[in-house]
Amino acid sequence: MKRMLFCFLILLFLAGCSNSNHHKPKNKIVEYGDFKCPYCKQVDDHIMPKLEKDYIDKGKADYQFVNMAFLGKDSVTGSRAAHAVENIAPKKSLKFQKLMFSKQPNHENKWITRKLIDKQIDKLNLSKSKTNKIKKDYRTKNSQSWKDAKKDVRRYKDKGVKEAPTVYVNDKKLKDPYSYKEYKKYLK
Image (cartoon, rainbow, N blue to C red; front, side, top):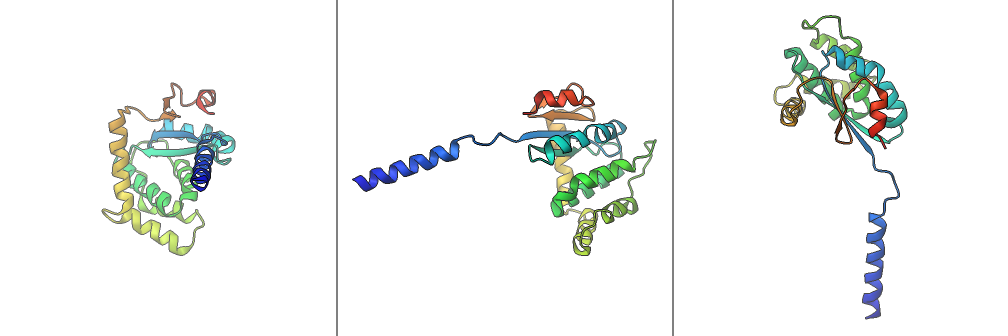
């Protein structure tokens, strides 16, 4: 009987330890956008460096870019490439995003080409094997990156997102995604 009571107390203690909140919960930042969207580029240029420095790099926030891929067929190609990077070299996904936005021209014509994407992938300084795997994945019909790009489109439509950029911080939609103060209001 004493042994059972002892085991019960141990289990109760372990359950209490696992439920205790010793660590702050991670913040969740979700941006709905498109590599071809000039307003999304503004967020990437002016907000992302601060978010990375203050939250993402310190492990205080998870960031996700949901690529709406609604500004042309090349947007879809860009989305597939981003997912291939995310799936194969996840630590390089923000760098790839930054590289893609840095190439955005001052027009809405087709500019996201395989050649441009491949050059950005090469700048990630990955092994030849990973680089080739990423390039193959985003080009291969029905690959994981193709499926993930389709999921992004379904996700923004299901969420009712009507414009880019739309940003949620901890499930709160920001009124002004260009104001860092707005982000800080909802970040823990």
